[in-house]
Picture 1: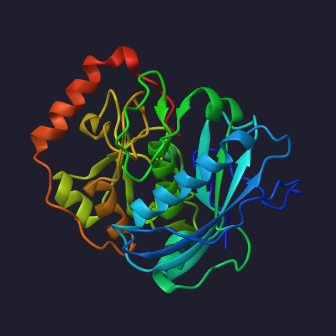
Picture 2: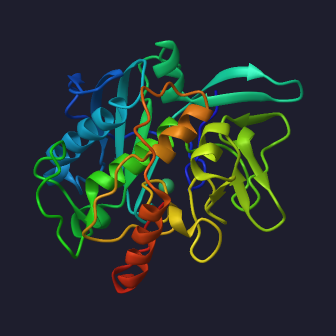
Length: 306
Ligand SMILES: [Zn+2]
């Protein structure tokens, strides 16, 4: 079992928790194809986000239900939400990982949440399964919390980042977009790697994801964000047409909703996550036009993806 850093340095979860433990409800994430229930506990020692606890709780549930609608398996997800000012914006990760197999010189691990979905076994018992970390100022002054994060029909404030998009993105890390590979080259440690690390290659300039299903969908190895491993696309660089993706590592436009894409699901499927269905492939032209639209709106660019 190893802790899994997102794009932030690995954390020690042994730190003393002066938690404001609230909202310890086991709530079904309705609409999920995977059978997912969840609870939320807040680690907010200075009470900096108390007014947003309810909104955060609803977004956790909606994000898990959205992912669950495309995945298979079952999990009871204990989510801990850390509030601190040392995190610039937001991070998300499974707290631990589960062994998938030995591959000779190294072991391959999957994210703890993926392990629980696949096996039905919680890899760390009653401890938190997923930790989301937020800067309180980012929560209060940048994110736009949806009055109904399940419906997602209200207009997103044009001067804010859609919180539901951020929650979906961070749970994407908790499910699969994570590992120990080098930020630039993707190279993993000698004796262990994640299911993501195992499918990454480096050509001397850029890194790529080489899962069969993802490559089939993209038509080539899928470009990973240089310097921001565990994300998709570059701008400039290979994979500009992946910038609109939920799991892109370059930018989230304000006033814009992002959602789980077929590419995200194909990648997770390649990593062994049970994917219920991948809907028909969007035409490449759709990707291209969307990417151009984003470029045209470059003045709105909000480089806050982590
Ligand atoms: Zn990220």
